Amino acid sequence: MKALNFTNQFNQIKKATYLGITFLGLAFQTNAQEAKTTKAHFGLIYPLSTNGTHAPLDTNNLSIHLLAGISSVEKGFSYAGLSNVVRNESYGVQIAGFSNHIGKQTNGALFAGFLNTYRSAKGSQFAGFANLAQKNVEGAQFAGFINTTGGDMKGVQFAGFSNIARNISASQFAGFMNVAKDVNGSQFAGFINIAKKVKGAQVAGFINIAETSDNPIGIINIIKNGEKSIAATIDESQTSMLTFRSGGKNMYGIIGVGYNLKNKDEVYAFEAGLGAHFFKSKYFRLNMELTQTILESFEKGEYFKGTFRLLPAVKVAPWLEIFGGPSINFVSTNTVEGKALHPESDDLVIRTWNRKNSDFKQSLHIGYQAGLQFVF
Image (cartoon, rainbow, N blue to C red; front, side):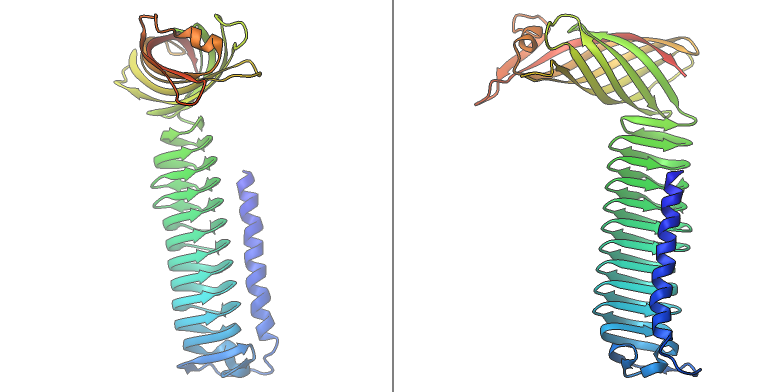
């Protein structure tokens, strides 16, 4: 997958960043020295500090540096205006204006204005841009752009753009994309979720991809052990649609295009929505759908219809299903043809009203949809 290349690139950035800053500090070390533990370490930047050139070998309980500090182990609180570099483990809290770099495991919390890099973690990591872990993480990751975990994630990932992990025991929340192998929780993304097995829900603004996911909530859902179908339908306003339905055992998405047979101008139809299966048996099931339909002439005027429908479905063959049922519809339109589709005199219209200070007319009416779909 493309996401794997994305992960590899960030792993390279992670290693290069850590090694570069670490070796920059070690370059000032003139000879081998024995490690020691100090109570406090203060300085400007290595080696201009109270630990001097010995700093990369020292274990500290407190470290404060105006720009950047380096140490072997941090057992308490450390702060740097630019970067903290810890060659081995860290305990407690590390705060840096730009970045924290932990060579082995961090046990506590990391706060960085831009970047946190570490081998593994037990605690939470907060970064303005990215958290990059080589191995397992136990805790939570919060990043303005991306979280990557080379191993398993036992916690929650929150990112403005993307989360990448191997196996995750909780959930992923991203503004654009989540990538994982097995998810013992749920995935929430603004655009796309990618996983192998998901035990919870996959919620995406557009597409979900998985081998196993019973509850994907997205317009398009490519689930290996799920269901996909092409359906031809018609409704009470004589709008015929060709739709693609895709999803898992319980939930599915709907996207389609069509043509209105009554109108002369607003004839091009587009539909998107979500659906769920209930009362499933070998030959029958009840489908519940919530959709949004628009009719367009690609000129002036708008027609929007929100629909809730219940569609009993009968499977006449393993690959063919016939369905039809009632719907309740809310319409908002400012076109002549749109208003004519649902006049007040129509027995199916429950109520009509005009929006204040607008030429839009709104109506609530009862309708129907019927069709057949080819399942694959």
